[in-house]
Length: 250
Image 1 (cartoon, rainbow, N blue to C red):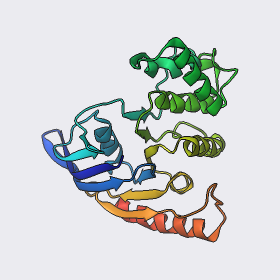
Image 2: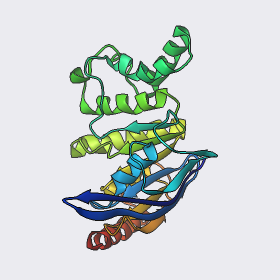
Image 3: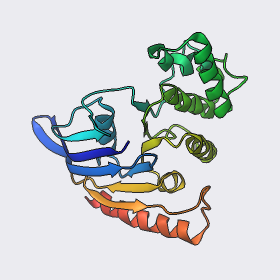
Image 4: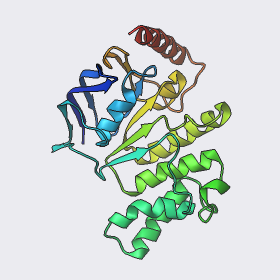
């Protein structure tokens, strides 16, 4: 199902002053695409993501997922937070199983699904560990596959690698890409990291501070996994660097 955003507007009031964060945003994300919202802090990318999730309401405009109008949170949209948001009192397995509480499945069906997700994320052997007992990368994988457990149509990720150090970030990018290729879920990710956007995305949507205006919707037509030293990769990086500078100026 395609995700379609039509004329999304959002303003906030601070100290009596109203500021428009998103001004008539129009965007279509095709089924199975990995699309990244890239832009400087304050450009409205996370606000837009939370509106898609149904956590916030737009002042005006509409969002449709297939034929269904998005009017609030729903199980057809999974969300991965920057800080993982794992339940510290639950094990890895119990965290992954959490969304299955809302599914009409037998215990056998639930266990089969959990085993499949543990295999997919290479977390077998860690299923009885608590979040504090595993690495940041394993926590991120746990959060990712937990969001898949409910079988959402769309996966929304808010700077999912933002809490990781540089080297772990590179490794987890490859792991997330591998997980995504196995599922081909529609993904909308927020980041301010150019290399992360190019490495993972089919398209990169660059947003400006000026009302979240879309400066560019850039198709990343490169083979996976991506060679960061290739001419085409470097050209995309240079183009996005120029666009980000423009976005910072508003």
